[in-house]
Length: 81
Image 1: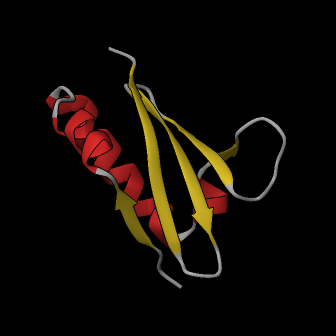
Image 2 (image 1 turned 90 degrees about the vertical axis):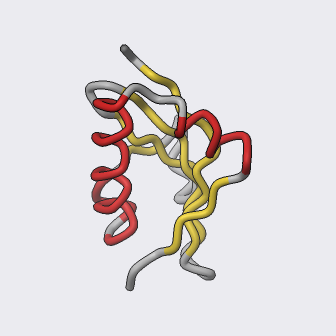
Image 3 (image 1 turned 90 degrees about the horizontal axis):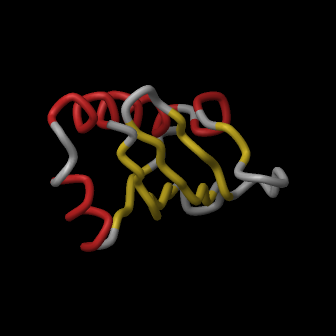
């Protein structure tokens, strides 16, 4: 099963404003997440099976994983550069 990525306009604007190195790293990581979200992310606090963190060397992201609709929503990005 491959998931679909959803991001609202605000998150898309933040993502578009990332430095090239962070943007490239995030894009490649999100491709892996869409193929297997639970194996490529960590729980955000208590593992509720929905809220996940993607921690990279240049950024981190908070995601919501909906296993029923196969949609991953990117809700927050933090640049670590």
